[in-house]
Image (cartoon, rainbow, N blue to C red):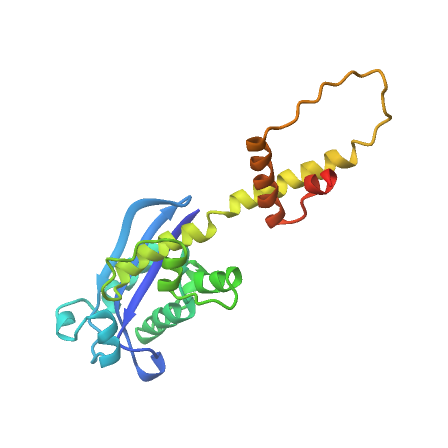
Length: 236
């Protein structure tokens, strides 16, 4: 699967007030591995930047005077994200600004979902951690992602951090699926184990030592966190 982790910086918070994109950053991953391909540019918004927004990202109007306009890079940007899956934190915000820019230039296909799928990591984080803070900063701390280089919000560094957070958030899924598969196999074996007893077997029973027992209990705790632990029930 080809995924593009995306972040933007803007002149303010609302397109309804005419705010524009001033920075776009995309980082490509294929099969959850970084490819080294990036798309990054600053843009001339053709308007002033709110003081509050400038305090967040540190980009001034003067910094952007000689940068291209969104209409100048639209085709190049859309080609980069084409047929991929955009991984965005609070996707509604970034997608809304991208579609606003496309509509301003009267682009014939302004809907981002016509060019790429969209995965919202904020929604994902809220499902995984309900009732907790799920900002990018909070997730970096929760998943031990080093954000020490992030003095201000910049689209490129935020995309890099989001990519690492996303991989950390979703990295346990394979293990959980494996545990579930083990549980199903265990259930099947348990259901098929009711056979007629045999009295002619001379079985040798070797009991586990303390270290082996502790490791076994730790494994059962992990399985129990994923659902019903049939092995522990069968031992009770």
